[in-house]
Image 1 (cartoon, one colour):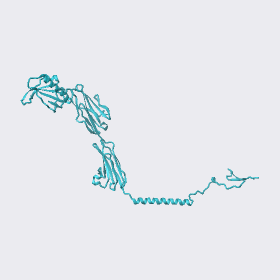
Image 2 (cartoon, helix red, strand yellow; image 1 turned 90 degrees about the horizontal axis):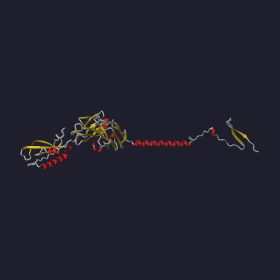
Image 3 (tube, one colour; image 1 turned 45 degrees about the vertical axis):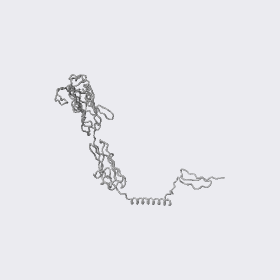
Image 4 (cartoon, one colour; image 1 turned 30 degrees about the horizontal axis):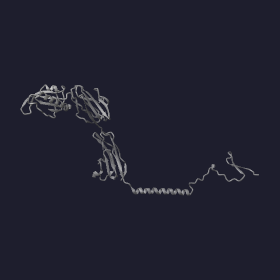
Length: 381
């Protein structure tokens, strides 16, 4: 009989039972052919080595002999067994072979998910081993860097003081932070087992609640123009999704998909938090706010008002005409002032004195004492 499952007890051979595949065969009906049965049981042992690498069990029920078991590394068990031919019960021998001393690990949850600041247990359980005191190690693999978490019977690194070993091999972490999200590897070394080493990897996911998002809403937009509203949050994990509300009414991702918003024309990207109006209308005025949410929770920003106003075309044209008229009047006034000489400087100072024409033979000399001009005569002979 071939079965899989179960765990070995301290004796090493006594606890391999479990559900699985069960082909059965009886022994020879005549005298025992020793060479034939040795070959048969030797093949059975090789089958054990292949199938029982992780806890399979093989039994052969029939008229076998006790002497064959110890030669082949099998466990012998006697008792009453049923014959295949329906001839009732007869004395027989059950031969069981197991992979002796193969340390094996399992985990109740290989992908635990926990919210930040909660506690979590990383399950690592020894199912098969002959070693009573195996060596346990936990390692953390993050950003292609490997560090010890539990080594030489002591919690290491940033988990010191907020982690412990549960039972014999499992690891419990308190006050989990986002930096604890990583791949953890449980490694067991059993020196008394033929297969001495086994390991199991556990992926820890830490969920982080979003913080208050930053919202940007334009205060006033002219009707018919484009408007963009933005919502961003950078702390949440996994990455949050965004939803926008106007006057406490949730907005769909596409205004065309909801008849209630047929007078609007906008698209909402829930991944980036961007709400874009291709052309705003008066009905788009209101109080807007955004909510960022993920599996860990949600957060919202404060309401902000967006006003949509109509453009007064006639008023704009009239204002432009008034400005042009004022500019024309100013230009005309400046031209008239130039013509009438209001911008000509008629003042003269002492330094700009222009001496009159002088007759021949007279030189005018300015003295410092007099501050004026005096002349001296010269005679020409």
